[in-house]
Image (cartoon, rainbow, N blue to C red; front, side, top):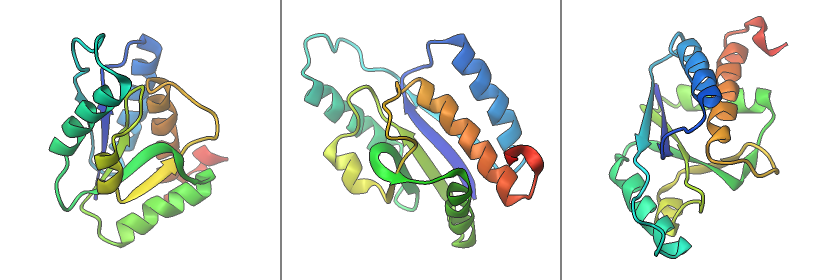
Length: 156
């Protein structure tokens, strides 16, 4: 299985980039991992929030294949503790999922078309985080999941 993280816009803060890269280096020891950043839309000052969300949604959909298992990181998704999340990952591996894609939406979330395409939604917390910091939180949890799956001491 390959895991991919699909995101809107570059990370602005160096501490997020550094932490992201740290966990990425750890994750690739377990399986292929790829990140893809969709460029931020330009000239959105005169656009309504719904229009920005729609255009970002079109860009998301262009980067998905029919056989991808797509998981939205979304406030309305199912919440797991770390062990349960590891179980979710293990289940996808057992089901021979070819590519597991996690998505981080923009500031306005996902379009309806992206919701319709998604196979699953996961919420990392009831709290609201910026779409920048959630990348780092997710990477730490993904690494933790693989350490749990492999019986390594990181989780303890």
